[in-house]
Image (cartoon, rainbow, N blue to C red; front, side, top):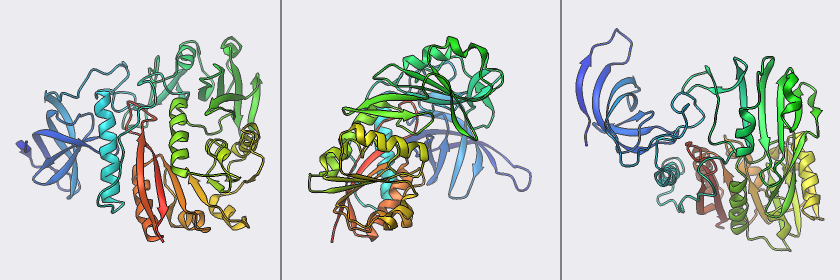
Amino acid sequence: MAGRVVSLVDPPYGRCPISELEIRTETMAHGGSAIARLEGKAYFVDGAVPGDLITGTIDVDKGSWGRIRLDKIIEQSPDRIDPACRHFGHCGGCQWQMGDYQAQLAWKREIVIGQLAHLGRHPEPPVRPTVAPGPLYGYRNRMDYRVASGHPALHERKSNRLVPLRECPILHQNLADLLVDLGDLGGVEAITLRTATTTGKVLVALRGKVPPQASSWGCSVCRTGANGVEPVIGEPALEEDVAGVPFRISGTSFFQNNTAGAEHLVSLATEAAEVGNNDTLLDAYAGGGLFAATVGRRAGRVLAIEVGASEARDLQANLNRAGIEEYRVVQAPAEEAVERLDEYWDVVIVDPPRRGLGADGIEAVTAAEPRTLVYVSCDPASLARDTALLAEWEYGLDWVTPVDMFPQTYHIECVARFVRTY
């Protein structure tokens, strides 16, 4: 349905025209807003579901695109449902609780296809259906909070203001139970709740004053600051089992926030890598060794690169826990570490930051001309940009599988397989 302008108010000079519209949204965009089209122009509508008929106001017009503020839903999309959390719409942690879950999975696949076609310049992106690795709620094994009015808080939607939270249904039950028992956090600046879902252990890492009731929480507690991680109660680390490997996760070190999802990432990376016992596997951006210590068990030798000191220590410990004997760990940025390597690798796995690899990163990890590159991405846009760059380096995209590591949000994890084409 085409949009219909209901009224138009002339604005003061230099401001965007304010147009009241009746319009139907069509698709979902990367970033979580629905898209509506008027006279060929795309308008982003936060809070809408594809298929909603709405009235709204144009409050941003950038010429080639704009934003519509949702005023009223006239006719609900068949994919719209009631959100499960009372904080939804105010808290910025989730964006899609109002969408049917099967629709969420389809939106994520469509977004990946769109990004690869547009930014990746791929005419027919080979994107598989989105994998749903586990529960729709209760999946997060870690949550990082600020503190406001003595309570854990997240940022308000589209704002820097903080929203104190009394509940959070996407938390693993261990953390959901702890959240309501934390008490007054006055004097605490920030607090991280973590749990190992396979062992049941819980760790709290905080910045600022340790509350007197911390001893009643029934878990390990540590304090973070300029001097690193300071143990307060118990050991400042967890042990989590993924793909048969008992991983040590220290303090606030990075580890995937969805344990069931991590299992699926490992399974897909193993499928994509196709490593054998005569191969050397390079795991760049290795973190605590999720892929080096799992996929690496099939390789003859593992090279692992990680810049973080805490993660690098965990990485070495986890390679030993996995029973991998032939390995080398280099603590440095990936681009610098590759220059120190005096050996070749047959397969490379990369799990870069949100910004992606970029030209320098691609040049580094493909320096040995590996036959296969496995790309684990947390951002479809950077994956798409790197797909176009990899094509210039003669690495073709074989397939991509989106993995829904973060249900109820617009965030998308992907595993992509690239093969050398020359």
